[in-house]
Each structure stands twice: as structure tokens, then as C-alpha cells.
Length: 163
Image (cartoon, rainbow, N blue to C red; front, side, top):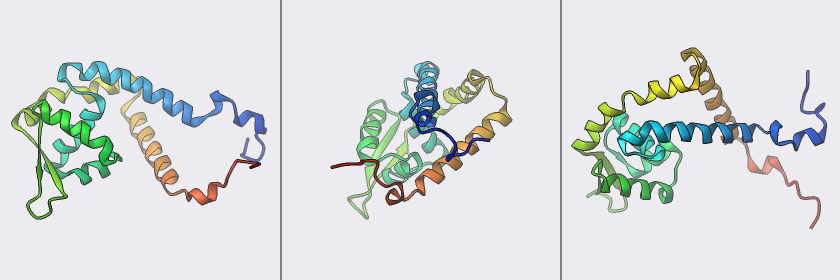
């Protein structure tokens, strides 16, 4: 069985041995499938993610949406502006704290949920995986993300060997 200590250094630099590249390629493939599946809803994949959070949790502060989606406000704000321009959400400043903006669904955004119900099944079918395999893969990816989030950048050290 190979371990980190037994794999030759040159093998680590092969593109086809990079887990990050496999995840990147799978993400690009998913984005293409989602692009087609979401076309009739008039949503991009990132907009769909925002709508999923709002359909599940209702009105939320922008910060709460960002935390759930792992997006910063600089990335999230343009998404919310486009969703608001499309009539799916409303943004409001909190009367208690002017710095805080909450987002809620409009009637149109709520109604869009019904049209979106078929999307997850279409995506699941496109993977060719059984439901148990999808659940297992998602759990393993969530665990991987948690482990990577817990990495102390100082523990990675520097790969630079010179000045």
C-alpha cells in the first residue's frame, strides 16, 4: 500500500495525481450541467445557491448567507443585486444596525421554488450515481473540506528553497 512516504516525489507533480485537479474538473462538469438545468429558471449556479439558502431558511442577513455559502460579501453582493433586479429577492438595511442588510424572498422568488423542485433530481440523474453513493460522496467531501479548513497555514511551511 502506498503512503505519503513511499510515493516518488516526481509522481506528486503529475497533473493526473492531483486531487485538487479532479475536484476542479468535476466542478467544471457540474457547472455545465447546472447551466443547462437552470436555464429555464433564469438563474446562474451561484444565484441558485443563494435561492436554496433563502428557500430553506427564509429571511437572513447577508452575512448569514455568506457564511452558509462560504462566500465573502464582495462576491455575494453582486449576486444579490442581480437577484433583486430580477425580482426574486429584496434587500433591506436593518433599522437596528445600518451596517446589516437582510435579504428576503419576494413572491416571485418564492414561486420560483416550485419550478426548481425538479433540478436536484435532474442533477442526481446526470451523475449516474445511486442515492447512497451521492450521500457518501457528499459526506466525504464535507469531511475533506472540514479537515482542510482546520489546517494551520503555518504548518504547511514554505516550498521556497531560496531567496
